[in-house]
Amino acid sequence: MADKKAQLIIEGAAPIELPVYSGTLGPDVVDVRGLTSEGVFTFDPGFMATSSCESKITYIDGDKGVLLHRGYPIEQLAEKSDFLETCFLLLKGELPTAAEKEKFDNTIKNHTMVHEQLKNFLNGFRRDAHPMAIMCGVVGALSAFYHDSLDINDPHHREISAIRLIAKMPTIAAMVYKYSAGQPMMYPRNDLSYSENFLHMMFNTPAEIKPISPVLARAMDRIFVLHADHEQNASTSTVRLAGSSGANPFACIAAGIAALWGPAHGGANEAVLRMLDEIGDVSNIDSFIAKAKDKDDPFKLMGFGHRVYKNFDPRARVMKQTCDEVLGELGINDPQLELAMKLEEIALSDPYFAERNLYPNVDFYSGIILKALGIPTEMFTVIFATGRTPGWIAHWNEMISNPYKIGRPRQLYTGYTQRDYPNK
Image (cartoon, rainbow, N blue to C red; front, side):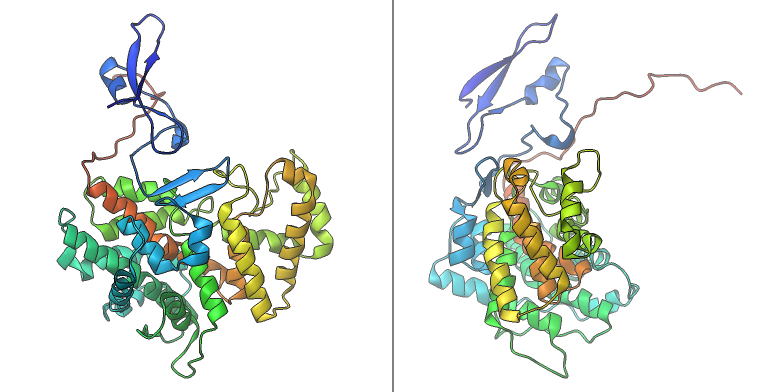
């Protein structure tokens, strides 16, 4: 039932009455579905003013710098929760009890292995292939290995697929890295936490097994938590759109990975390090700050400001704290990291950036942390995909669990009108 009514008046036609709905949070929403029967539809490139679905998973207030998962502020989840508990919350809607948490953690641990034949699949890729190219292919191929649970109308099948994807993504990510580095792949260990296991598979070798630092494991876990979901972004919307066709969950997540690969989305933290390379030295910062302020100069400071957040990115506060912890633990003397910290200091104290709310965002700090951990730049988006997997699955499952229609956006056609094929 609509809460209010709106009227659309088009010159020369009778007014069109449209229902207006109110969510639990956020602005009212005008239901424009009835417009097609009136012979018109809306035009909204980038879908900046279009609600494509109803969801109970994540809420963002960009003006206030708020991010809620199932109602819980991201700052509280990052401080008090861990990644697997956040996964449970996104999937189930509530925080788990202690017994539920233990069961969920054990279930994930028991599904971290991947089919041994996937190694053969990896061998088909060039060693210098971009990790995201391999990730897209391998995740999409999972449906060929786990086709015993692909009935999207069966809740049990959907749950099994969700468990498999969350459990196997870090294993696949580490396999992709090891393959590109020419190192032997490391099997997961059930005695380690989710993030410890990932770092173990990334950096240990059969010749040398080193213990995983709790500080670094916690930092990795926070990176996963802070990337777990972000409402109807490009990759999540892609997952939903692919899922609306009835595609299997592995294909849908592979589609999300492909969308995430774009530099305007998941590749932003890679762009931060490329920008630092371009600046080169601390002595050059002032000139590059001047370039960023010059509206006629195409140079942009990557990792500052956010399309959604018109205030401080709430994830960045947590990520800054984590960044300080990691750099303190590792005691790294890296010119690029020194440059990043100096750039942060100047930008935070410069009125130009404060007036425009151009604060360091989550990508700025995550890029620095991942570099400090020794993760190659081309792997950054793969790690983003690993962290975003539970959000993608939660949205896919929410859509499939309710009545839905196949996505079919309209267009404003500006091409030729009908014309006849010429006689020859």
